[in-house]
Image 1 (cartoon, one colour):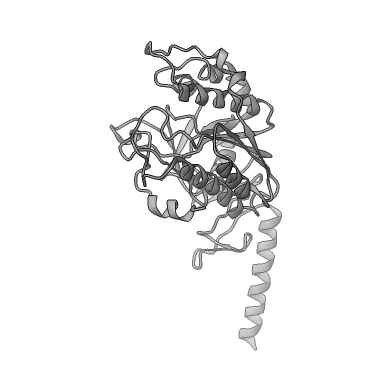
Image 2: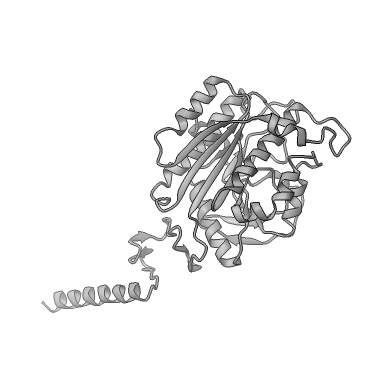
Length: 342
């Protein structure tokens, strides 16, 4: 009887202690079982709550002061062009439409995987397409249909932008028709982003994302912008060029991954509508003059603002296997490719 009484007493005290911790917004963990009673989760589960708190063991909890309310994903597609600036074949050597559809499918799968986490965030995918076949457009509409987020597919009208493009580039060469369509598509994307209300993710149609990518990206954005007290840039890819030589950088701990400061990306990145408006002139300069490298104005922005990329990667850029801005190292390329077959 005494043992039973002591057990009941201990259970009462434990429950009372948990209630007190919850009242004062403390987090506790049972070190023996790795169980967090306030969260009702095991420690290796996802503990962060979007818009509320970021929890990383053993670093503790951060109260989110910069919650995400809206996420606009602007997907630039052109399934008729294999490679923009070279004739080499991509990894797996498929038709370009295969990369376009798997890329879009990976985004939708990742958003659906974290549907419960995004219940307080309004999400929209906008596809800006140039010159894809009706079959590809139908397939994209099929991928986007019957989801909890908004979506639409727009057709790019190059005539609205091509007269603003300098036809001679920084290397004194003629700007190709493929590059003109690319610059026009980026221009249209930036104009759309200017009207968005919070986060904007600009993404090309050859990035295939991991299933956890959007939860990690959004959670990390909230965490870093809270810590740094400012809006930032995030790139989902861990590019090979980062490992060509030892580089000085700084590493922060995101939700489930490490993120390093980088000073270069391609035109796939996430940022806020606020920073799009702040650097509108610099961003649109990429759409009017072909710099070398093409993203030079973006890299100039990174000298003033933080940009981070994950280690390991959250997406693979499906280029030629030897591209320094292509396939991420230490990444299960075939698995992610196969998972996103349409």
